[in-house]
Image (tube, one colour):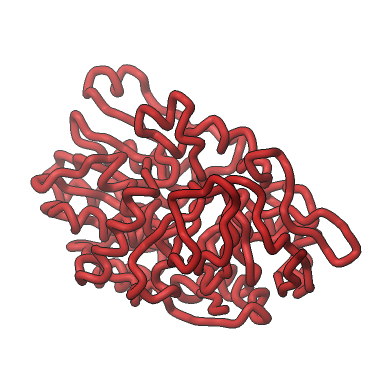
Length: 371
């Protein structure tokens, strides 16, 4: 038995996604969970695929930032039940490899082997067109459709009073940004934090730094509107690098010392180098922006050693989704972080191409599909 449903199908770069009817098994295979999607955020990572910067197999259902309700479970599933509200993670851990057992599930061997190739743990797809063509699911999630099927560990239960539109953002942008500040950078209350880039990840890095009591948070962007948003989320100072020199402003704001933490949320070599150059002695620069493959940066290893500087990569906010997702939802419901202001437009699945056109133009923070 199968379920037929609507999905936005990506078939070629720089071409609109097409709304098609596809099918999925109504009974999940052992270890899998069938989720009826209720909301999905439009993330910039998917845009890399849409414009041809990342090559993927096709046809594919994009989307990796979503929330929904468990509709069916496969044999052996014990961690979720039918009716649970869940947030999907695009790094479903195997829970057995050396990375998982050491508390670093985003580095899981299974994720690197299968999810990164847009497949399930058994190396297969779960969705097909009505004429039998296999359809891949982006990062093994594929949230731009009315249903998704993921491994049990890819569906994290959360409280049922949280709205789906806001909860969906925890699946990527919120976890990536807040986690970069709290998990990767380990921001402490007495520190000054510099955040370069005030998109979805950067604004959440600001929220994360504020959440743990950073003394000062300096937001950097080239758009005044984004910097105003940054102030709302917790920035104490802002720098518009289209009119101001970053190194001069950082020196002014820190009495020439530099910042203890710099979080780069753009993904460009020049901004990574700028983050690193802004550090005080003993400081740490975190790369949370999505960087294109093959790019390089230049740093002085003597300065790194002499000043004990650290340059740290951050994948998915160094998160543990099974722990962090419910906690972040609790923070939202307790008014400790703001997810409402991240959702600047709620759209239908039919409007997905318009949503990505707006993203290209830098409009809003997050459009969210409501199913």
